[in-house]
Image (cartoon, rainbow, N blue to C red; front, side, top):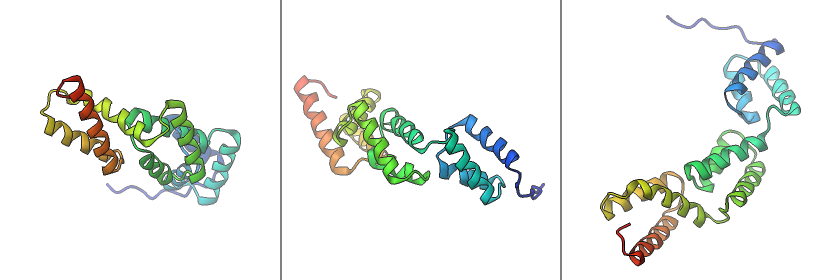
Length: 173
């Protein structure tokens, strides 16, 4: 059965209820929240005004959102800085806000260089690849790191360094 076309939402109170329900589920940056409200039928000027008021009250904060997402992706998922920057841009976070958030998280987590980030992600993933032959392990690790946004050169350098460490320890990986 086709969905009934809904009336555009022009009532600020109804729009606020929708926004608060969305914010209960997860944080949103300003631009993404405004887009989502429009998709849910909120008229553009009502959505823009509401997001502005929510930002003024502190319920929507791009800097906090960017730090949270950066920490989650850099540390939890092992993503590259480039990948996190692209994700933040896709969600509508300003470039300077994203850059500041990434710098803060990298400093807090001891990931000042991309080398440290790729090595941390590689060591974490290697724990689950221990029973594989060296060629399969390298192929899977390369694919894993590439999907997280690290460059091929950086991946190769890191894998060489980890292979040398493994050889010095006398183990297979």
